[in-house]
Image 1 (cartoon, rainbow, N blue to C red):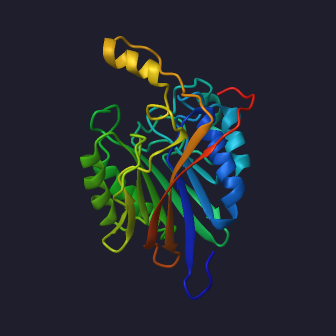
Image 2: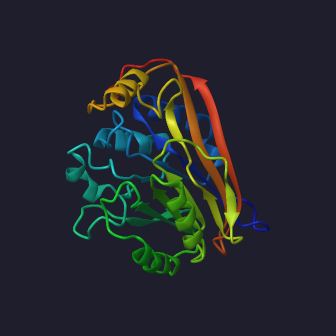
Length: 275
């Protein structure tokens, strides 16, 4: 936390974490840099072998220093999620699934003397599995801002146009940050919208460098060439990358003061652990 003169909080957000390479890349990054941040969020919908999140991996990620986890359309891919998500207090699933869906679409987290709201939304364009998000999000942002001025949105969507438009829309209601996920390709358009909202169209992904958005090149190539459904496999390799965003937020107004992309790579020694 900065001093009283600035009164800002520094938040780190990791783009989609893909399999074991992504988990270990995040683990090692936080081992070196965790003390630099007041609060850490990560998108984890691809964290367990590229699809979904196991309870073991959920607990491991907490031990690495992650304070809150967001997700997306793949959060349900591991069946065990239904047994533990009701008690997974650090995990947020997209809010625009039906109300009967287990889990929470937003949560309030404690960060010292401050509260941080984390809201997860799933896009409709090219995904189209969920409820229309525009009206419900206005009500939810207003509700959260009655509790805290600091509101972070992870918008998990395919189309850049939808992300840009929805980001501008959310900035009109005073969200502190709007961070796009899902495409796994980090965009170079970080900015502050309306002098309020730290914005990026996509934060990118954490995982193997030699890959197709974290997945094995050969299986990806076969699927594209043949058109025959083939399960993607997480790419292996010692070189991993971190795609993340850091945002400085005024704790009184909730306005973003600065936003910065992080893109770095390192060699990651192989370890025995399931993906």
